Image (cartoon, rainbow, N blue to C red; front, side, top):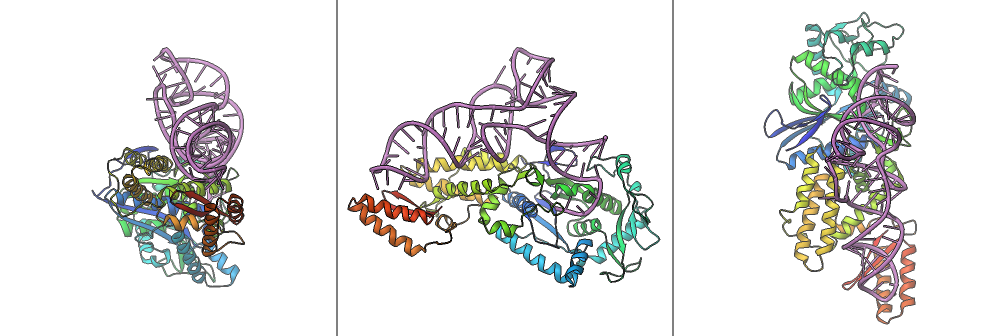
Length: 462
RNA sequence: GGCCGAGUGGCAGAGUGGUCAUGCAGCGGAUUGCAAAUCCGUGGACGUCGGUUCGAUUCCGGCCUCGGCCUCCA
């Protein structure tokens, strides 16, 4: 029985999809005017795990993650660079796909773009006008009339009155109410624009998600996800738009992931304190970054620290060390209590840290039995890999992971390493310990760790 | 100011009304030519002040501190 924390009710609820056996899920993706940073990576990894896990429980999942490829920031950035906005967005979409793939994030089933859904967007705005939820302003903008939607503020826990007191009024405002938000923005000279019943213009930020999610998944769907900073106003506005236009409930379970923090502050573009995925991948393996993201429950803050990325490396080394040398062509061990513990953790609102704890205990069990019962160890190892697969980790060949670490600036090649190990083995046979230790120290200085066993010497990169 | 969330051992991070998180680091032991890896054992925590309770880190309230949203943001 899977339970999910629903931000709409602020409680964990038993998950039951609208259509038995099928889950429709929409996640707010990126606005593509820059490279992905770790916060974007967290969204992608978290909901990738959600989709993987739902599928593993037998659900057919339709996972939609949108791309915002037209908005103010994109226009400004394109102007700064003196290039067409779509050239800019194409480049960053490409980069995002590369980053996602590197982190083992499976592609969503659909990846709709705002600029490819102008007809749906315009139709929804027209519908909102017709149903009395929106109005055309004197300058050609179209605004949502927030006061026409009594439930406004429910998701974010705000009241219209509270919002009213904090609302700021810009000079030259053409809204009827400061809380109203733009569905359609009239084009200024030189801006990208599309034809509409209200003249040339472009969609507001929120309407694209309402239009695209409804088109892809229907008026009502199961899960809507995104970063916690989208709760208000973005998702609040989506509810107002979609329910205002369709007259039906919009989303059944709202999921928001917590922020990545650095020095106790939110990592964000506006604060400028972010690391891009690319920067981090220059120093850590993709699987290490992914593991690091999963060490925190998705709603909790994730504290960025080099020490913790290093910890991720140690942890993965422990897993892969246990898997190394085990047969992987056997059936997974069945009926293990640790497997049940893993699933209990995942079914409790995707508690990945607890799920990882179960995997560590499974790892200890593998190490414990591998001497006397290699067959059982192998079966447990296959199980460990399967569980890891649900999280998108431990899918590498152990040897590749263990030998593929950072070789350092003066990294030795595999062949050189093997040669040195053979010379050391010869010295060991001769009980020439000083020679053997000298070679081991030499390798250690090059970042190579040796591990002797009765079966011979293995090595890995530290 | 309004609303929301959080404060757990050296670090990270789960969880629970009364026996164990887990990983890394530390310490002791086994193993090893010595190491490494591994196994066994072990120390160390629940912001603060009250309340409820036989018993609270866990429930309730006050306080303190921190973070977030209220404006673009994953």
